[in-house]
Amino acid sequence: GSYGTLAQVTLSAGIWQFNARASFASNATGNRAIIVTNSSTGTSSYDSMYVRVPSAGGSHTTGLCVSGCFELAQQTTLYLRGFQNSGGNLNASSASIRAIRIA
Image (cartoon, rainbow, N blue to C red; front, top):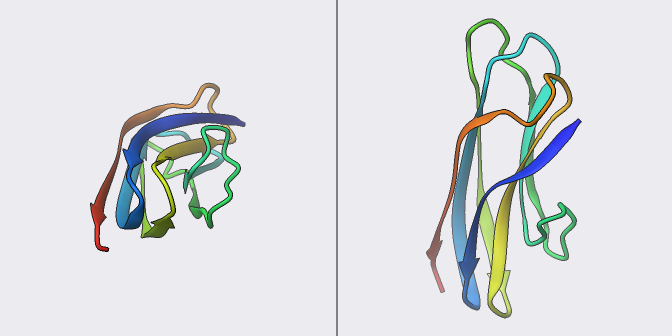
């Protein structure tokens, strides 16, 4: 499979609500996934937010979104990472992560 960082945001200490999304190019087989984590390698000391679905196939893109809250004790970079287990190199056509401080 292919993994890669699709987007990232650096946040100060506090409680943050985030929303992340990514679209993957069409592929007839395999799975697509996104994860929000505080590590550029995919491992996390925080609870990661993760979603995985089968590829849409045909000419359709596969769109994924995830949202959640993190309480950060210090300035931290959150990474939106993508995964696919078919189709060669990671082929995300768009991705973003947005955060709003709630406390």
